[in-house]
Image 1: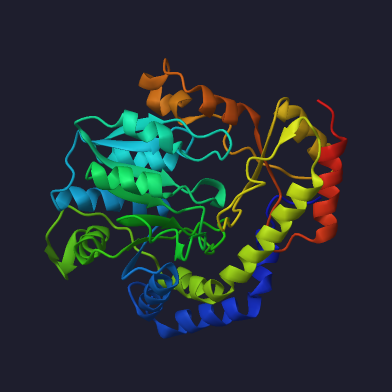
Image 2 (image 1 turned 180 degrees about the vertical axis):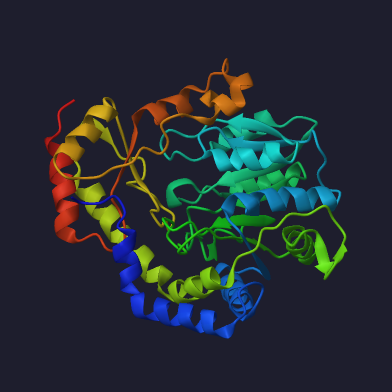
Amino acid sequence: MIKFLDIQKITALRGDEINEAIARTVNSGWYLQGRENAGFEAEYARFIGTEHAVGCANGLDALILIFRAYIEMGLLKPGDEVIVPANTYIASILSITENDLVPVLVEPDINTCQIDPTLIESAITGRTRAVLIVHLYGRCAYNNTIADICRRHNLLLIEDNAQAHGCRYGDRRTGSLGHAAAHSFYPGKNLGALGDGGAVTTDNPELARTVRALANYGSERKYIFSYIGRNSRLDEIQAAVLRVKLPYLDDDNRRRREIARMYADGINNPAVTLPMADDGTDCVYHIFPVLADGRDSLQEWLDENGVQTIIHYPVPPHRQKCYAEWAGRSYPVTELIHERELSLPISPVLTDDEVRRVIDLVNAWRP
C-alpha cells in the first residue's frame, strides 16, 4: 500500500532528535510556557519573517484568537463582515462565526483553487472589515491585487497559513504577508507536531500581546485577568518537537516540489486536470489535488491497486449541517471542485518508484 501520508515514517526521519528533545523536556520538569515554547516562538517568527509568533493549542484557535484580539482592540465588532473563500476547510469559517462575525463566501478560481481576486471587490459592503485568505493545498493565495484592494478599502488582511508552512511570495513567506496569520501544526501538516498545536504570527505588538493574553485565560499577569479568555497554549513537548523539525522544513518542501513536478510531467490522462501543475509561486504542496469527472471511480481504482487517496473536501461549507441556513445558496465553482477533487499521495518520504506507480495508475484509469 502506498500511503497517502506515512506519518510514522516521517517522524522516524528525525526520530533520534525528537526522542532527545522529548526526554530533555520531560526531565526539565517544566511542561507549559517554558523554554521550549519561547525558543520555538522566536525561531518560527524568524523563519516566517515577522516580529512576533505566539504559540497556541491548534490552528482553529489561532484563527479565533486573531479575530477576538481585533475585537478587543476595537478594530472589529460583532456583525462585521469577513470575506473568505467558499471552498476552504470549515475551520476558516468557524473562526469567523465563533466571534459573531459574518462570513461572506467568495468563489475560487477553478485554475488555482484559490480565492478569485477578481470577485473580492464586488463582495465588499459597508460592513466589510477584513479579508481572510487561505493558502489552500500549500499554494500562495496572496497577490498584489488582493493587497491593493485591502489598502484601498482599509480592510484587515488575515492569512490562514495552516497548509502552507514555508511557502513564499517573492522573497517573503506566507504568514508574513498580511496583518496577521494563523498556523496549524496538526501532525499531517508540512510542519507537524506529534499532536495539536498552532501559532499566530504578526508584526503588530499589540495584537501579539492581546492574543497571548486571550490564550492564557485572558491574563497578562498571574491571577489578573484583562479579558474573558480561554485556555489555548502550545505545550512544551510539542514546541520541542517543532524545534527539531523546523530546520528541515525547506528541504522537506523541496522534496514535495520534486514529487509535484513528477506528477505534472507524468500524468497525461485527458480525464484528469492538474490545477497545481503550473504554479508560478514557491508552492509547498501540502496537498497535490487533481480534478476528475468520475472522481469516486478514480479513487476506487487507485485503492484497488494499493494507493491511498483523500478527498479535500467531500462537502463544501455551505452544504454542511452546521450552516444549514446556507443550504439554498449556490457556489458553482466551489461545488465543482468539491465534486471532482482527489488528493494524491505526497510527502518527503514518498519514493520515486512510488510516485511513478501512482502516475501509471492514474494514466491507466478510464472513467
